[in-house]
Image (cartoon, rainbow, N blue to C red; front, side, top):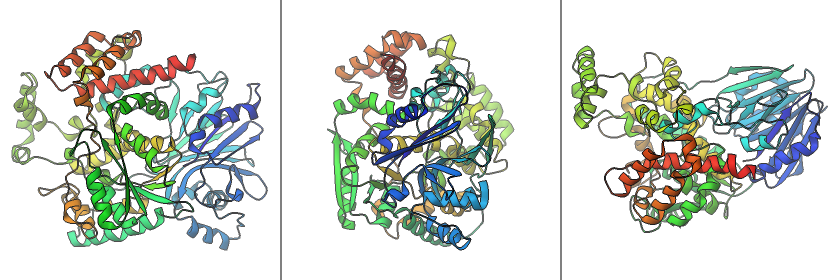
Length: 617
């Protein structure tokens, strides 16, 4: 895992060594094994290490080249580092360690920023080149590792690092709420803009790098998701998946510490587990709920069949609610994917037995696993009518009372760009505007936020367009963020073999009809997985990571807990609380399922209190 922080400042008169150590201590959970910092003129670098590859002090960071003219801080893993190391040695580079970190340094010396094209892995790093006094900052292809930066400081100093909370220890940092972030969050359930919930603090986009020199910042894209279809048979792509995934898992298992895997009842983590065959697997479920809210028995059954020791934890409602402030603290920004909380407990459980864990994130996005990607038989039949007529009916249906039938006609006359914004859609635009106070309404709509992504895939089929949008927004903004933050909270490293550059190159060639069809979603992946998994697991329907929050809200104990927050002065700053209480009461009395509305607002208020009220004490 690991984590780093850094700053470039010319004017603030501070004890840089003390400040960087305080910033490093804030992210100590990311790297409990050792730390180090480097002060060089205007640039200061700090690092917290979780030892994974080369456990010796030679692999400590910041790491330097032979003449100390280049310094690097790096979070992640370069899976093809051994191949790159051999190549660089042949070119005359001398290595002092057996770590993947050093490959980036010598690779930069040899190739400059083009080293990014040669890397295979997950990474975020900052490299200080003293020779021309430039900072080279980069983030991996998919956004597996986080990278934040800001110049919202009293003297325009640049801060950068793995977690936003570390910036708050810098004397010149100006902590302000970004009012434009709240409305999109209510729809997307995660921070959906490049600018975070902290004004002036930005996420470096996946597949991008930054050069900072002479106080000027230049950001460029170096990689994009490849979707270039090549027609081949089902059997051909089943074999391609098999070979590519076996290789990816082989790379992802490289470690000098213990490796295990997360295991639910779904095909994705089951396939990874079957290929990895670790000593131990880890699962969580919820107390008093069998089946949909507790798949631990399914995971235990597969582990037994594979000859693997399974560990599981059953989570109670009290444990769930008690840990929410801690979860949101580690998230840095409000994030209301309910699965973040069980993932926190899962990581805690796994940390008692292993340091590296493999998981199944990314399979749904690259192989077409979501229900949104399917078109119902009724809609397929309706779409045979010319679009111009469906558009007319759609406009008429919009003016009628909303129900299942009018919704069908509305969507039937819309292009995918108008109706799909990603896997998470909580508040619709109308309800978000109604519930928010005026100060928080001035923000882009969900459709406006994803428009740029759609513009990058003109002419593609609808499934590919939706996959691309999810990989640009939902995947880094939600799925990968919670995976990184919840695992790092417990000082473990989570690896995601589906999100490998070579896997994506292969998957991008698979025609949409082999991914999503009348038979199933992830059709071709299931066929490949079926070669190492029993039918029951290869063909199990997707259920996600369900949480019985909607059931708990019907109990007075938890209803009152949420109601207290909704009636607070904090809530009144942002929301028309009469509407919040209306949603809560409707759900409590069984009049409507408002669980996602309630949870999304509740999480934001818990997060705001943690970062803007409690931290001021």
